[in-house]
Structures are given as C-alpha cells and as structure tokens.
Amino acid sequence: MSIRETQAWQALEQQLEGGMRDVHLKTLFQQPSRFETFALEAAGIHLDLSKQRWTPEVRDQLIALAEEARVPEAIQRLLRGERVNQTEDRPALHSALRLPREAKLEVEGVDVVGEVHATLDKMETLVGKLLQGQWRGATGKPITDVVNLGVGGSDLGPLMVTSALADFEPDHAHEVATHFASTMDGSQLADFLGWLNPETTLFILSSKSFGTIDTLSNASTALDWIASRLGGDEKLIKRFHFVGVSTKPDKMSEWGIDPANQLLFWDWVGGRYSLWSAIGLPIAIRVGMDNFRRLLAGAHAMDEHFRTAPLAENLPVQLALIGIWNVNFLDIRSHAVLPYDGRLKHLPGYFQQLEMESNGKSVTNDDAVVDYSTCPVIWGEIGPNGQHAFYQLLHQGTQPVACDFLAPINRYNDVEDVRFRDDLMAQHRLALANCFAQSRVLMLGDDAIKSESTPPSYKRYRGNQPSTTMLFDSLNPATLGALIALYEHKVFVQGVIWNIDSFDQWGVELGKKIATETEEIIATHSGLETLDDSSRGLIEAIWRGQQQ
Ligand code: F6P
Image 1 (cartoon, rainbow, N blue to C red):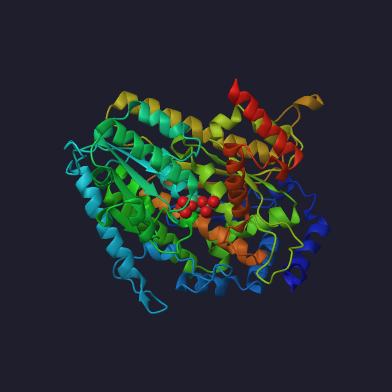
Image 2: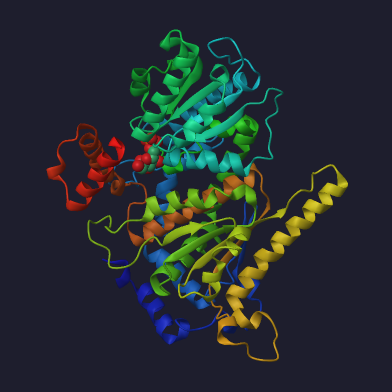
C-alpha cells in the first residue's frame, strides 16, 4: 500500500484543502505561545519549528502518519542492527560506532561494541604516535602533515568536522596539520604537492571499497611524488608514508599498505555515515582522540534521545516530519542549509551527500515506482555570505525554499585578550542578529517592519518562506556530534515514511562504468562510433585541442 493511501495522509490532504495551503505565517503567528508550542531541546540542540507553515493539528496528523508508517518499530530495528539496508542486505549500524565501551550489542553473533572499541584503541595508538612526533618518515624526520585522500563519505565528513572544530587542539606539543584532496582531476593534490615536504608528509588512503578511482588515482600520484623526491625502496616509502582505512584489508595489502598501518571498518557502515569509524582518523589527528571520543559521545546522546523520546518530542522525528509536510504537501522541493558560523562552511556539502545520496530515490522497498516526491534539493552556504548572494531569491524570487538556520549560542567567551574578545563577541552578536532578522523577514515579509505607506511592488516582500532555527550551546565536539546524528536520523525517518532504502546508492554506479569506457576511447582514439553525437563531438574537440 502506498503511504498516500493511509488515513493520516488523507487527513493531511484535507488540512491542506481546508486552508493550510494558502495560510500565511503571519496569520499562524497570531496564535499565542507559538514558540513554546514548537520548541524542542535535546543533547544540547535547541530546535525552533515555530516558523514552519504548520499548526498543532497538522503536527498531530504527521505523527499519526509516522505511526502508520511504523516509524517507532523502524527506529528500534535500525538501532538493534537489523538488516534495514534491503538492497544490500545488511544493517546500517553507524549508531554502534558511538556506543560506549561498556554497552552491549551483539549482531548476528558478533560483539559489535568489542570490535568498534578495538579499532578505536588501534586508532588512538596511531594518533598518539603522530602527535608525539614519534611517527617518522623514510628519512627519519617526524611527520608534520597528513593528507587525507578520499572522496564522498571518505572525505566530506572528516573535512567538515576538522573545519568545524578548528578551535579544538589535541593535548600534545607536536603539531600535525591535516589536508584533504578528493578531486580526481588531481588539482587539489597537485597544489599540496607544490609546497609540502615529502620527507614529513603522511597520506591516508581512505576508501570503504578501496576501489574508487578518484582516490586510487590520487594515491598513485602521491606515491610517485614521494618516490621521485626521496628515491629508495617503494615498499619502505609505503610503510612510512601511507596509512589505509577501509573495509577491504586484502585490497589495502595488495596496494602495499603495511598491515600495521591498516585501520578497518565494516560493511554495515555506509560511506556517508562513516566519519564515526576509522574514516574519522583525520579528525582525531586534528583535534586529538579525547575530542574525537567527545564527538562520538555527543552523537550517542542523540541516538539515545532518538531511541527513547516519544515522537512528539523526538527531534529527528520532528525534523523529518516537517520535511515531509514541506515536500509532499506544500510542494517545497528546495531546502537551504544556512549556518551562521564560518566554521560550518562545509556543512551544506556534507548534508548534500547525507540527504541526497540517501533519499534521492524513486523506487520503494516493494519495488514500485513512488507516486510522491522524495528528497528535496539540498544546498546552502554560510548564511551571512548567502545574504550577499542568493537571499534576494529567497525574499523576492518565485521559488519556495525551506531554510535551516544554524548558530551557536556562545562564541569567543574563552578568548583571553579582553579587547579582542569584546570585538569578536560583538561580531558574534551581529551574526545572531542577522540570522534572526533573516528568518523573521522570510516569515513575515513586509510586516516585519511598520510602515506608514505601501512601498512600490519591487520593494515588497511576500514572506511566508518557512524555516527552522537550530541553536546549540556552543560549537564543540559533543554538540557537533549530536547535530550530525540528528540529521542522520531525520534522513532515516523520512526514508521509512517514503518507503525507500536510505542506505544504498545504486544511482552512482552507471556513471562510473560509462566513465571507464569513455576514458578508454579518449586514450586509444578508437571506438567513437559506439557513442552518441554529442559525446563524439566533445571527444573530437579534445583530440583536436590537445594536438595543438
Ligand atoms: O560513488 C559514491 C560513493 O560510493 C559514496 O557512497 C562513497 O561515500 C564514495 O563513493 C566513496 O567511496 P569509497 O569510500 O568506497 O571510496
């Protein structure tokens, strides 16, 4: 049965026809105590859902929809380690990666917690060696720079978290800088190789499958760079300058990664859910293992909230439900992520993979084509920068866009120099004022300000753009962990309601296959006749251009 046939879905459609389709947020705000009605808090995250175009009655029907879709049972199945990833027939147990050491979780006869903590301990030893200056390169000098070579989930999570937690330092004297190169064109890597010292550089080959061409091509360039600069035995270079993180020990060994330098994780960890595993190695190197464990603890706090809170108070569930209302009933298919904190500049990119690779699907778990919309287009930017770029469209364009505003409550309190601290705290206040002002204007439009006369139409703001505001006590490992877990679980709940598999990604495979064939054609100058007219024309242009 399609979710559209459930009683709750029909009731929601009636709400829509009964006035909710056209109701303006300024009318909804005439209800008293709207903030208290729609404010939630858990694990250091404060969620304000009052600026969404819904009412308590709509929320109740959405909760009924979640119940009809058996969301409560699905949450327990996910966290217990059942095979919720149907097409790949395996669990999606990222929550197990953040269980405390004393927790118990046996999945299909395996002590998952024991395995997770054994890997965390191996990771801690490796991180300790690096941060104490004891990991030396082939010429005996301590490693000063680590370059993560990975893409997608093996890049975006660690990149986002190391940037978000830039204020957190490890508890060690020896500094190791972290860098990220993902692009298969080699441009990011070539830049680093232009100024890094091969004697003191360590590469992490980060790949769940250890078969991704983007990462393997960067790895081979990095190896040739060190070998050509330092000379000597390639085996030794691999031992001193390469670490591997993967679920495939055989492939790592085949490439030449020393087993002592291999960190493993499991096929029940999805790539875009893997920053909590050894894929998070660059995070632990950048902020220290204690802070990495705090990140895990913050996510675990959100997992516990998700597992135990009733649907009406459950942050991930509520965030998911408002998304369903916006996409499936209000027909809002564009969703902007707008952090008011420069340290979160990589958050929109990270959420793009998390949400769109998880829920960008159109076939249900029962192998039927969906007859409703699924994941909206996720995009975003640092909010204050977006104000000077695309907010014009949010305020006066023709697209409905749902926005998530994110900001820390506290910032710069620990800066020691008083004058400098006051300046910075004033800047933080400015950012918060802008964040609140923007969501208010998006909500109320012209009514955000009292005016004697009616402005000309080009100066008018229609308002009624819905938004969620998320505040966290401060941006620290624990709140960041909770925030990421909040979105992970939101994505899962939406997947359950849409009856799709949030944990596979078959839609990325065909492009990879065709690219392999295309590369062969470009390299060998043969086989053009097998292609379409456009591809043929483009490849001929490359051939002509490269001969000149
Ligand atoms: O092509 C998509 C994808 O498979 C993502 O799901 C994944 O995060 C990324 O590629 C990288 O994969 P791997 O970690 O196996 O190199």
